[in-house]
Image: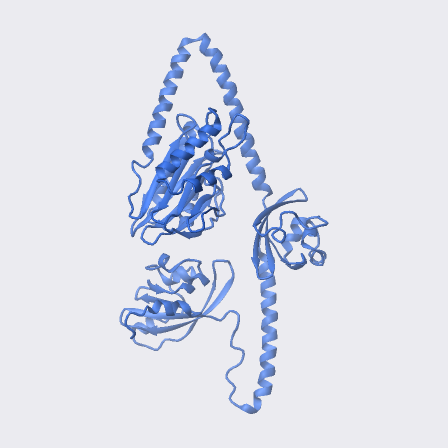
Length: 529
């Protein structure tokens, strides 16, 4: 063997998935081609069952050759027919090899796009005829794949449209026709903007502005949410009917507005009653004392001290708009050098928000410990909150799981403000976010997961919307531009000083106007640079 040579580099360069398992089907090694199936990195699946991670099964695969290899027998190739993380069908040929008494290797070759058409020709005289047979088989396979892909695309619950650079439509499924109320064959011969009833290209289009990845269209009294992706020379539009979600959010806002209005009216009534009845004043004092105690209890739920991790610096700030608020941040220490960092915001203020915050904190610490996938953690929290919250309240959250040894982070968002990431190498601040609805409102939600790696001098700035939405006397918001400028300006300062200078600027901007929402800030900084 080559001394010092890292064979994992070689294994990561080949096209097949290479996995080493023990006698109990636990994964001991897997190369980076794992992403073909699960969109996970190897470190996330080590020690887990191969059939569970790769093929979403609860028991070993049919005809698995592992038992044969244990008896020193000859392993036969087997076929795995499965669905990858994007929902597409994948077929792999599995080849097993014996390594030693404890470990076995399986090489998974993707044979989805090409199957064996004809056995090896045994006679040169039949070569021409065999080639014709192969061509016919390929044609049939292509037609079969086309029919299969057409069925798959038309079975998707969302609309799907593939657009070329000249706005012509390449692919369009039946769901789009249902959304816009027009026949699919008539739509296919037109331009993409004509599908939405326009006579010229949409203003919010990635073919006009490459920065646009999401937009909204109003068609036939429906609100359609569009997600854009670029592939080669095509734009893929994923179209979802979000009418009910918009109506729900409007209803939530309306009810919140009504609640605030009723609270305002009640406050006025209390002022009149306080003048007439001294006893009510004493009762109000008791209520204020209880709220103060709730605020103290809530503050005690926040971390007593921030983590002490070599190479990293942390700082946090929290101020409620009332005696008890709905903001929350936490630092969850896991095993193997992993940490979970979260900032969350409960809708509303006061005791209800404080109670929901306490419930959310308890769920995070009880159920997501050692869950190193941020999206899986948010899914668990959402399911438990939906089972225990029966009000119109909900929780937004941004969650980061960091490997403190490597600096690798994965993150997920439940409808929260984007994380502001300062890249020291380029001296820019980027907004980092991921798709996912807020917690505690919808039973089934999929949370997108993203990744980044800390480099020397980089800063991750997490916060609640009370910071950017702080207003001055002219009803102008503090906003992202001003906040990002301050992060760049003070990036060389300690984290505590960064928060200090930003809050001084916010207070100066507000001109003495009280904050209408809770404000929470949590900063992670990689030392050096």
